[in-house]
Image (cartoon, rainbow, N blue to C red; front, top):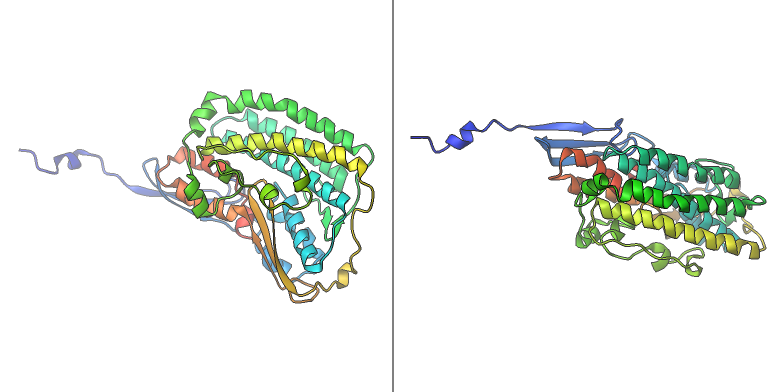
Length: 380
């Protein structure tokens, strides 16, 4: 007679083991580490570990003049630095009661939407590469490089622009810039069908991304998910529309949504957002020639600028989600306290750790790239 535990005895023993992805690994987004505990090829638990890149921005800013911090803010999210600049300037302007000239507001919107397109093209390539498709990555980087060309001409900086200052922007557009922006937008728009054929209708990508890392709308709200990741659950929330800033209330654009909340839906939302950003920039290009006047308002001597005491909370919609600054002034030449509410804090830690449980090891990288996290935002 067989013993009662015969079937258990004849099965090979199963062991849990640990595996680190990152911080230097092609399957991780940036200098970041994700420490996994697995059984076979299934993830039992995951723990995010930041701190391998830039860190401590908030404390650094407390020791520098208000104007000096403009060089720090874009480094908090390198792929999409413009919202960091703009939201910090909005906070200082709110504390000081500065009224930004209308032309400067339109210029900021142009820069913000160009940065959004560049960030989405960048993440397309990374997401595709996690499923074994490298051509979209090469395409995305090459097409994205056209936008830093525009930034270099517009701001003087290719990666870190430091174009926005409290009260406006540093300089106006060069002659013929609107035409060059339009030509770039025409090219990028013509490329979208190619991306659809190569990636978004490719059955390899569709099969891998559908059902991978799903988030329900209820979970998204409980976990603090924002941006494209939230809109991929079907909730049409966008700070640009629901809490307008700059001149977004004067622009026509749609808020793309998808229902499934999985990696496939998150990719589709970003694909559709590129189309809407192109639409917004075209409206800005058409409007700028009719706007004369200054590009910034007068400010005190930046090296001896005592910002009035008080606190403020300003938010914008970055390519990653809702980005906000909480800034406190004690009336001195430096911030008393700064705090960044970066969307990646939620997406790259709480959400990623939850979605990784139960998934297969080959989907861990795809889930992270589909969330579009920016590691420096976590350990800022």
